Length: 404
Image (cartoon, rainbow, N blue to C red; front, top):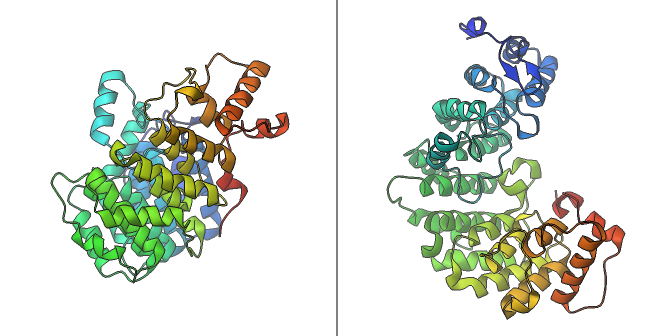
């Protein structure tokens, strides 16, 4: 380990805030058995190499050594290292769900313009490619025998490299076939869905349908339905689509022992289910919107996924920053938007970015937003400036009411 560590000119490589000269010291700390110093080393990499999702020039050079440390680490730090490694590869990208990363498209876009959604810099691109070379090593930590939180992080890490690890869906399926713990069945099903979606040829998915059976927990059933939707889109088996509808309209709740173990959409599986419904296409729009309206009217808290999916399906052809008149909406669109506004699960940027002119500011903007909300709901009630201002923030209602 570390045979080449000192051959790298860390001094001249930059992280987010300056020179990465201290990286070798903290890499050696992570490799040591001194547990009390691990936290400081992890903080160094999170704050300087992955700060708020920004990736650095030095990241690709650190990744190979971090994988070496992971393979020889003790159980108390394995999960931390896995989480750091996938974050070093993709930052805090929210583009994983519902379709996974299309790296071929990202590389083509980067080659044409010098950046893409994930590869916004050369350091970001090289970080992903360095992670992809070694991502198969996460399979070991996804297997039974490791702590549950380690396995969850490893399975989620693997999902970011589904396209790079073509053919390895077979190993995911093998692990799943022997799994009996519902939390890990859920994680493996969601991961398999992304792997199968990015396979070069059709993947056998009949075994996934067995997890739709009512003999499984609601969480596992919904994960199986999400996986099948991810793979098959509009050709999804009807039972999978109906399972998602039922989960949404009955607002299923899930017994997740420790919510932070579940990375998928922050653990909001109903929101994830709403995301994959955007893949079905317009043919079943009314059914889908009816289910989403019921869900959004009944859920106590949600991530952005559910309201944004509702808006994307109801208004697929919107032009951001252009005025949209409520009189031009069809009946289903009015019902869907009214349900969202009455539910309270929205922020102003969801509304004004789709329906109001972008040049509006100050009182003119607030008045236009108030009038738009009234015209949708056909109600005279008005949000106070204080309440409306709160809705202009960038905070999901999921964050206001944590579910354990």
